[in-house]
Length: 475
Image 1 (cartoon, rainbow, N blue to C red):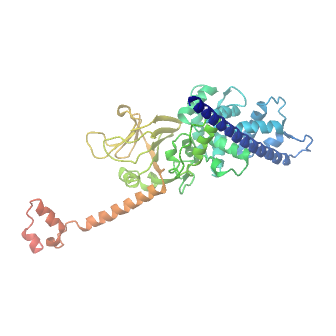
Image 2: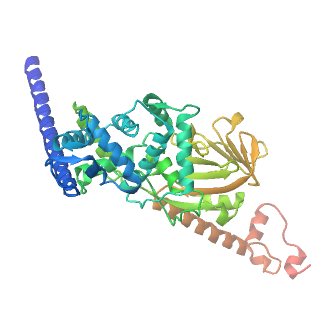
Image 3: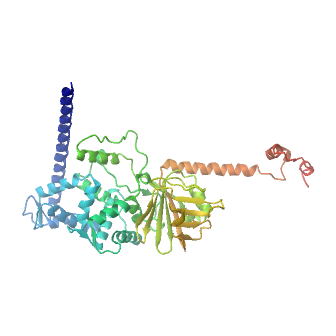
């Protein structure tokens, strides 16, 4: 019986392997067809006499990339030809194009993508210089916006963020090796190439991908966003999207999108299914502006009015002297009290002048308005004895590692669902109506005291309220 069970088990494994091989072959055949079709489209764009059928010249390939992608086209051509021993690199054959393209398409693992694109932007070297890194960041930004269907735009504030990221990578060094880059991305920007690979994958497999294979870059939209009006800029938004957990950038998963089974023994298919799980997340969440100190006023009362009761994750930007901009990413709603709040997805990120994740995980923030036992205001940092940021209750400055600095601006963006924003607005309406009702019931000497409900409440407390002035209607 044991032997029979063993044979049956091996038979199932054999069947599973055959099925996996068949699926792999099907995907490989489809990808080859898409790449050949793309190659033919590029052939049609050739300006020179086409004297080498079945080959693309370097110029024809690079001319397909325009604007901010001009440099990327040159680097991609170099990477695709270098990997297949094309030493002249002045032409690429259809066979080389298809083979190299298929290698890119099957890169489902982000660790593999990281290594591939690092060497691409390093132009084949074993290290990057600062110019290479700045080019890499700029192209990754442009391609991520394109993959997210967001119009490309770059301002001086965006360039400050990109320079801050490069400064963070290099520190005092002039060269950046892949190992150093891998360590940096692991902590500060794990999804830096997500949008790059999505864009390349889409181009190489055809403009229309099956819905189950779409992988949207996790860049949220900003409601009523006007470039230059806010502390937030598109460069900051992109940088945050490369490091923030999905709880800030996606709504809840659709019903029925169960986690894929990891029992499949084919690692390629397992990685593919993980990617498909990500693809089934609903489209990126739109962030709603909850509080803007320029518009709403820089005070603790105004901050509390606009932020309290929002039951969803938030991103708070704090801008102060020294070109400093910090992001407080909170995965729990803001609340006042002596207890710190924040869970595993909370993060404190410095955006400029040096981009870096300062702390991650919670509890991270304390907001004290009333207790005299603790200093009043907002305090940020996991260790209360070495706080990174403190905003006193007067909101007149920022203490940066206990050094007072002039505060410039505060912004809070709500990263939850539309329901979270609607619930906050409904709560505020209820509070307003309740305050009006309470105001109408307040004790006034010009009203009929005998009919006032507060009289009964006071009597229950043992207070004699039957004074002569209340019965006579005056003193």
